[in-house]
Amino acid sequence: MKEAGKVIDQQLKSSLTRAGQTRTESTSTKTESSVRPGREHEYAINTLFTLLEDAFPLKFRRAFPTAEDQARAKSVWLQSLKEFSPRRILRAAKKAIDNTRFFPDLADIRELCKLRFDEYGLKEPLQAYYEACNAPSQTRDYGWSHLAVYLAARETGWFMIRGEPQETAFPVFERNYEILCNRVLDGEDLEAEITRALENTQARTNADRIEEAARKQQQALMKEQGIDPKGGRATFLSLKEKLTRG
Image (cartoon, rainbow, N blue to C red; front, side, top):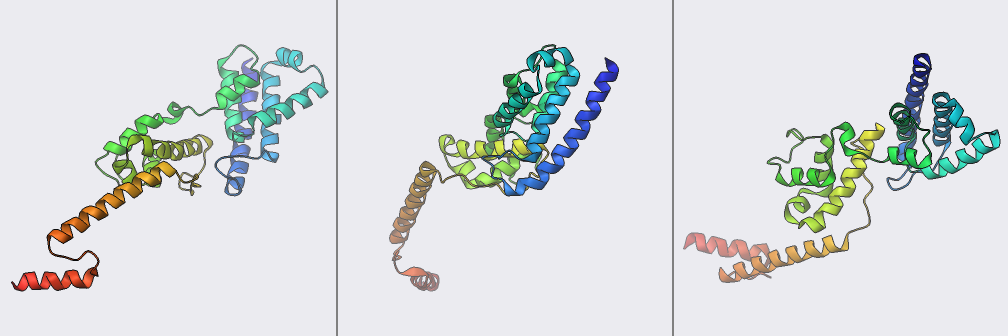
């Protein structure tokens, strides 16, 4: 059994390396919101079935007694798991093999593929948001719990993080943070550009209100000082020079 375990580990290590390479090569042509299954996904599913067969030979044959059964199952599993990276699929296979005595079905593998923030010392999204809101520094060198927190906050925008209400800012931050956390788990480049979601109308409306209120406050202050708000900078400088001479 130990020898079989070593063989499985070697297969998995080799497969993860290949999956990581193919994922890296193809990432630039995919959007963040969807992943189309390609040869790297097909390879991951084939490897997944091989690993399960090696780890649970009798149970595997009961689940898929014929080559036709395996082919149909692979097609279904491929469509169901295509949203996850090949690397994530194979890591889920390792977890299933290491942590269960029962033969894992498709639902088990899907559950193991899902993002778990604590896997790499990542905070839950709301905790990460509060960290960004309360951090005394907005620099990369600050002692962030993880670089993903800083990058998500930077992508969201520090003005939105600090100036907008949570119900407006948090959904934007959460999306950016989850994209980055998925990159961490998949071994991808954290610094790669994040495709922006459709503009948040509520966020835009709130920002417009804040900007309009600030503009009106500035105009009122200028009127109090005897400055024509529509006079432009030249009028302002002229009045400032007169006040300085007086």
